[in-house]
Length: 272
Image: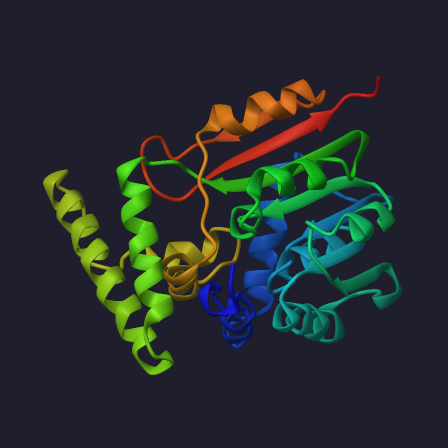
């Protein structure tokens, strides 16, 4: 992908940090604890591939893990460093590096981890299948591999690709207006759907709930979703079957059905 065709993920995360507080951090910690089915990560190594804002690296460290954070985007790296400085509990147990999951030298240099975590990232590499394989190879025996990958909606995914291309072709000053337009259309659809089910139809009613979902921000998620290029998608079986052939066992799966968004996967790697 050319530089012009790549969304500024790190700049979006930099904006998100202005809204970060201890409440959001607590929500992220609870989300991670629930996802992994653990109360603590003490004595565990946590590899965050595509760390973004650094929020879940921070959550893992708060749970006691030794953390390695990797991101391709220099601004994401800077965000993670800022979080480590402001909120981290032990900087010596949280290393942050700039690099790509597609860089074989980098990936082979990394110590394997008890938890390999890559949430909503590998579909932005322009080589998703290769990225999944390289990420999976960093999981230790008896470890976990956790990832979220955009669902393949067929024609719907192709429409979203066009929306994303429009965003990235617009002048910077017009990009937020495009996000508002797209989000407004979809929020209106959501409101009408709720009204049809005799539920509260007010638009944007779910935005506060987003804060309780992994500690995230609805606005920054919309910016990421509308602008995020590169963009690849997969049906669940396209993720599960290749990893099963590599010895992974699916422990948890949360899909969006036929909808848009990420399917969420947790795999374990039994010791041979």
